[in-house]
Image 1 (cartoon, helix red, strand yellow):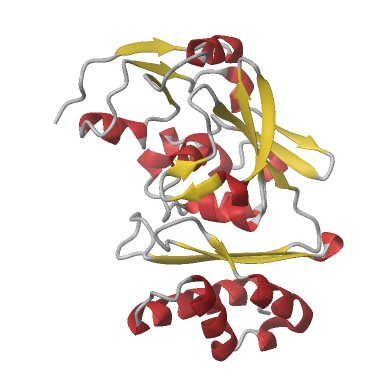
Image 2: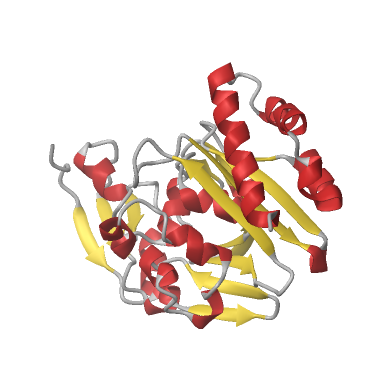
Length: 276
């Protein structure tokens, strides 16, 4: 199927892009790498009157250190992160995650901001940034606000983003010598969306411990009690019973087979993060 007719405009500056979205009633859609919006247009699941292409906005294609955090422009591609184009992200958790997203052709065009805004429950970036408790910079012609990723994604394909707003940056903690993290997912075949996934992030310097499961059909879920137990007792605190109880609290509807899949994903994720 082909997309319904729409007007196309390529933005050169951030000011231009936000001006187009000003006072929109939802008839204008922003497009980054087109890896999410493109198929929706072709299937006519989205029928905007106008598409504003923001992939070439230079302000949103930069990465910079901000103290103990890193500011990633929303139009930075998965490949930019995977290939270590920006020194600030070399060796970071996000570099490893980027290299596991879909296929290289998708990574060449897909953007971190576009993926998060699309909010697919099984997507890699929504899980990884939830584990990092990332902040999202949301901008409109009227100004800018910041929202933490765990509060931004409300459910499957549902986010706290107004029609006139765009994600313009993703702010994540910088890597330190003490940082420990893990990321593991099960896919039916390489490149597909995850059937079950888990991300873990431990930063002793800030007393941060977050074990988050994804591909649940909605927003990623933090296993708060298990995170605290593992931060205190290490891998020994993450036995199968403890993991099973934590999983049951956030996904009680899962079948026995699904629970086994998730328990294994969590175990392997934690082994990556804290194993020898």
